[in-house]
Length: 222
Image (cartoon, rainbow, N blue to C red; front, side, top):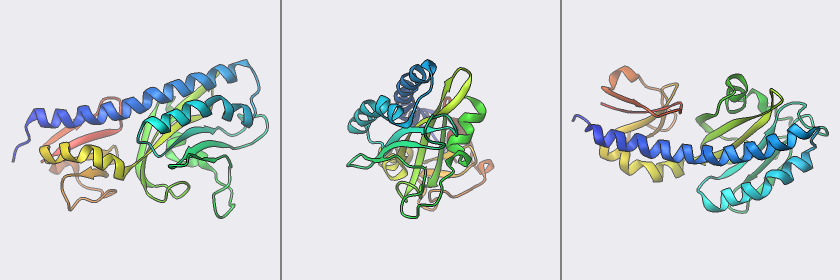
């Protein structure tokens, strides 16, 4: 069945609205931290206190599962690596550079949600991937670089559970018979029950490919 352009456009618009809304919140967090770092050396307690009120409001008023600031190596005066990250219904603070449960060093600077904004200087959406640090579930992580005096001092970000995104977007995707994919051709969510989150498939098999504006995501349909 050929997809109606209006239905596909509606899917794209919904996804853009959702992720651009998150990006707007991240821009506020960026501004708070840039102002702080531009003044001089910053320690972990000061950085945490600067964004905590905004992050808690962000968690209270949206359906994200976690948000905060993740420092670049050496950006803070007292910690080589540091996460000021609040998560879950109880907004628990994760403020360590060690993996919860094991105490093993956590070098998050190697992850795409950190490396891509560092390389490009632009916001990015990473996923779907299983977040073994925070949720042990499939998530989509939105991040944006914090740049002070021409240097990235970390990223601000927010996690959305794929399960949450599915509840929000699946009705529209079903109406269009469509699938949301990332820039590597992996399924995020799909109207096709045979396409599970994370599945890699051949985009050439799809007649309709509609990119989402300023996002590494597309809506595809046969």
